[in-house]
Length: 389
Length: 173
Image (cartoon, rainbow over all chains, first blue to last red; front, side, top):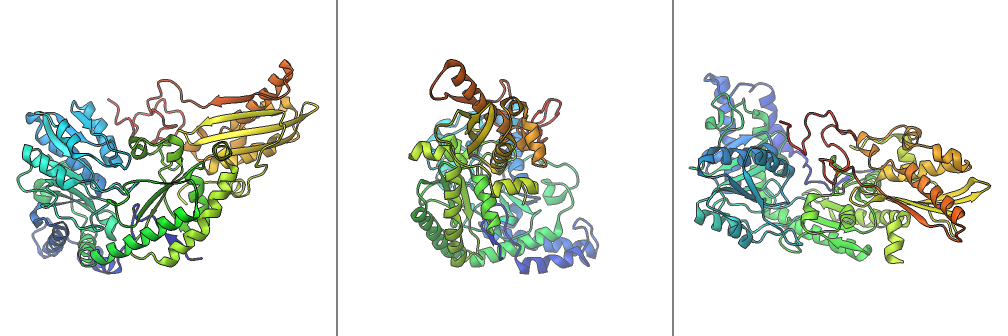
């Protein structure tokens, strides 16, 4: 049985051309980019070539790209590094309650360190109102950090609008664009952002490579102290093969973005409307239009997501869920709770994130496999009869 | 798959025994809380102080369904006294273990069965014609620093006393 993968928000397959480009840097081009001899130079040239490609993907200058190990590191770097560098100017940070864990858990750390964090509310679609950000700004605000696209519900925030407000007030603005870079057109200048997190594995690059865009003139205190890699912003020997792979993936993403977007939007639409047609008591999560292409986030009422995932996995389709039973913390998704959803409804979360290689046949397979699984679990559920009967 | 379930758990999850409801049940018990993810409702038929039949309905994860199925098998034919002695941990043992983070949340089968027995006993004591549904709300202990979660995400233990760090709480002082 061919396995179908619909969990691209968790990770994407590596492009063959990226792997091919990476291989020599595991073998003969093993030099340390900091060395001044030829071995080092080879590696240094390779990462700088990648820097140009990653910068081009988001409309930045190459010297504004700091390579990191992943999206989590980039988010930590921005959310800690900017306040640490600007502490003399204030102690107030603005963010949202629907960020990735690498921000959500960092909020708690920053609060323990004495910073004050305001989480502006989101509406039922998980959308931030720029006016709320404006209202939350004080004379002490030293950072605003708002994610671009939410992985769980797909909603894309009005980043450019928020960036206009922050730039008028001279406050650094960070966006976590890990889930959107490579999927939709990104230009840091048009978006009015000062910092932007991205991760290679979200656009068919390797794991172990991420980046933080830091606009020229914005101060960030490094998380890692040591050698003078990445212009002193991130110490530690660079993961050269992964960075090379990220560069190739960025180049391909730029070339293929429009094709990928058109295809994923159509396939996502087909999947969502087909599911709504075939399954009753199915809730739609996230904004109906302003959303990531190929991100289909729904909730099957009266049942719990993990059991659906297990049965779907047995049927050969890999999907995700924001159910408490999936998360290692056993908590209902903080995103859905912030959107004002009922606990039981959030438990039925089913998340399909399509990728460039998914086909119409894959979607048909979901139509065939999912409805009987949901019916079977509903027949087993004490909530089903209560509500429908 | 990432969720490591034993073969026995997967067997009971994919082919759960005794799913359903009993009309005119002698006892009905329910345990759970949707914030945690699992709700189990048990129905029993009692004859000569023995559990003659048992059925359940469960809202929850793979572990919760397997636990419900397993305890329904364990309880059938037992005297009420014997059934009341079955502990949640006995069910997990029969299932060849459960992932650590599922022990606290999903392993509530014995509680649900006992609630159904108490429902039967209270109906009998009070001479009621229909048994009252006994509901145990599975709330988390007061002062649980993990809020509405069920366990520590970093140590994956249901009892997190002694854990020095926890990614939810942030590093300890």
